[in-house]
Image 1: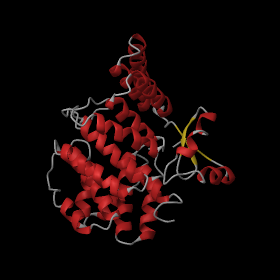
Image 2: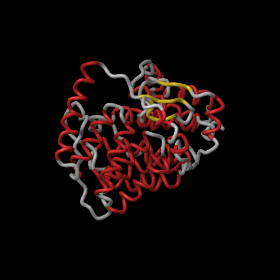
Image 3: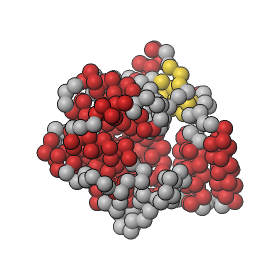
Image 4: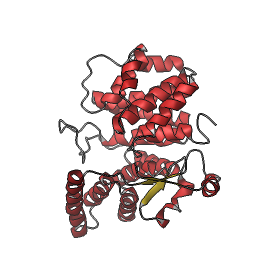
Length: 321
């Protein structure tokens, strides 16, 4: 992960403006260095991830195509969305957010653009702005029939698993959770569950965060009821780590195996480490929880939700304050 640590004076000066866990106060400083995408909740300057040559070449070719389509149809909502998505896959999140903002000036009622910009505000640690966008997206899409969203980074089966409605409510729940607004996060993920039952991948992803927020709120019986929905041999195509963590939460068995897999610096390790941290925190084992959260942020995937959630726990206003 390409990072740059801020000086303690600058870090605490910026931190004084934080609201909840939001990184909004840092945002105005990030553009001073074009290589910095945002500043983490721990004061680390985050840069676009390094990519292998072949992967970068493929993603840049996809971006060129998307940018050309957008240039040919600058007011087209679909072209705007894909231009932003292709930028984000290269780790150019600030530029993606700017593309969505430009699009929203043309299409102020676009719940799709708000959904995507809200996601990227989460990436950029601007959780308050993410909540605003995603709440608005939910309002605008309230009576829209649900449908699958096309994948820009498809799973190995090439089968889309998330829908427009589930994505709006899922990301809204995340933004609220990362701000420490646990009751609001619970409500958003409860709405998400209605749409997430369309397939097991969306179901386990939503159940995972619903369990975590139930723990935060001390709703043990509710957490157990949610875990009761987790079954063996569910049809999981892409959210295997959430599924395995839920099976562990439900049975209390298999921690050693999960711990043994925290050796890489990828999405899998970050997701598993955050889940193990949440488990230990729930059971009062704060030393083990802190250790797991530290492992989650020692990966190269700072845009991953497990990474961001662990970062929020370790931040000055997080679990260990």
